[in-house]
Length: 230
Ligand code: ABF
Image (tube, rainbow, N blue to C red):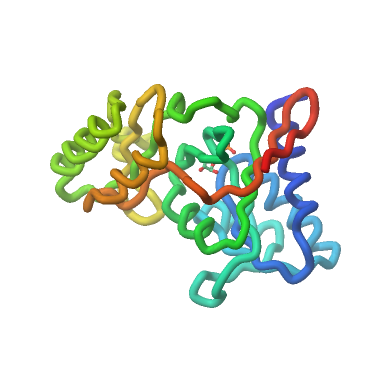
């Protein structure tokens, strides 16, 4: 079975949790895209839901699949967000942002009563940090922001190379919010909750890819079947 089949299986399991009338957060990435497609099939069959997309890419997918959309101005809370991740640890703490949509993903997840993270088993790790940590930054004053991030790393006993993410054209990758992303290769993050708090206090940091206390359920698809962690 291909990796893509596994992602679709995880997405299919999450779709089973969707009920008529739900307001949904729609994640970004190849696994979340399967969720949007499968949700679209159920909408065509009569399911009534409304979704808030976490990226322009997901907005386009949802429109293509006929999933009605709204915004967080128009609705108060969401019932459920389903999204992918780059790493998931046993406390259901996540690294997200490999696809560059971490800011909207975090806003939407935080506005949801429940978040289900869907992934293939390769995303499951004992300790976060093997995947480079995305940190979304404002281009203004980048030198100062980098130094503050380095200081936060030192306080949290982590270190590693920091690279500005590049787009295919070689220029800095620009997020949907008009910001840049620093990818920090930390190897291991011993206390991700503490690092998250340190990064939150840096003015030039808009958001970071540590999702702490947001996911309640992980649906992991592997060659031996689906594993649900809660
Ligand atoms: C988004 O998509 C991200 O936060 C994460 O970076 C990525 C996971 O992508 P995929 O499902 O394609 O592996 O959810």
